[in-house]
Length: 344
Image 1 (cartoon, rainbow, N blue to C red):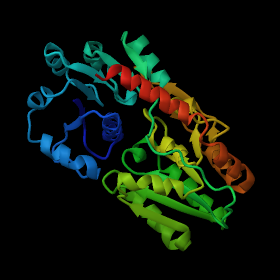
Image 2 (cartoon, helix red, strand yellow; image 1 turned 90 degrees about the vertical axis):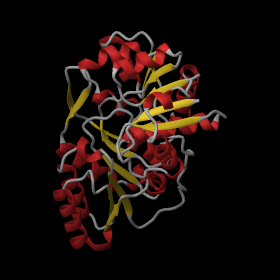
Image 3 (cartoon, rainbow, N blue to C red; image 1 turned 60 degrees about the vertical axis):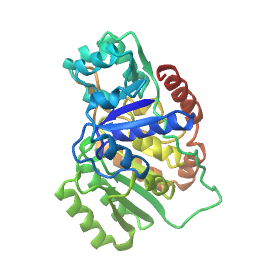
Image 4 (cartoon, rainbow, N blue to C red; image 1 turned 180 degrees about the vertical axis):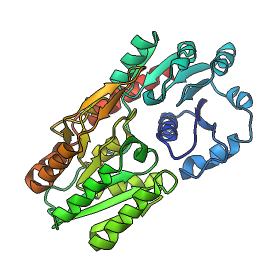
């Protein structure tokens, strides 16, 4: 059985865990989720009950039933050593923006370290001296969806996803850029999605100000379940994603899978799959932290100009929507192949 140890909360880590657990079930195996978070919230109807059941067990009692354990974070080295001593295959799928120097010991103890991007895999191999470091570009597992090119609505629907950890990866300027877009063009409908637990009071007030001023052209969706998010991406024409850093890029990947282009800063790891053929990559400078993880130095003036330009050219936006799926099938193949190699 595949065991996945994760923080079951409003975060990308449990979504990665659930995706890999679903992958294991789809190939005929068994999977179980174990949460390190006390009082985990409801995230997914399929896995909420499993997490509630395993929360009553000690980690060691749960782990003994598993042939492979995959962590979506870097655990304490003793936890990995305990599993290894009992013949349990150990796999890490960490988020590189959370890595610290102290994680080197645990990372080197694992049988495999899998990363959601090629550059993350190289960083772990070169900077942390890990020999078994593999890149498994994250794949959403969703059906690759095409928009009907014959449909040409009167409005351009723009999505601003601020759920889970997304507000921490950007700044309030992004909300102001979205507001100025509404003010500049009468043919824009803006949708903002957020969780009340992870967005600031200022941001909520500002979005409510937009709704009072722009009326039905400003839509707010609160606490949207994970299972319903893909449909919202599908129903929009463009996704604003001005993140300064990321690891698995779940949000832009979900958007592309639903055939909705993304306007994003052009910096790793997003630059590995967001191109001029499927999205709007915005030039930017950046820096690297002490571990070697890239962070954007954002240019919101340029971001805003690119945003205004793409919504002014509907034919260009339509062409992006028709080519947005390029490369996603290959990405899915690599994801499946790497997981099959490391999970036994």
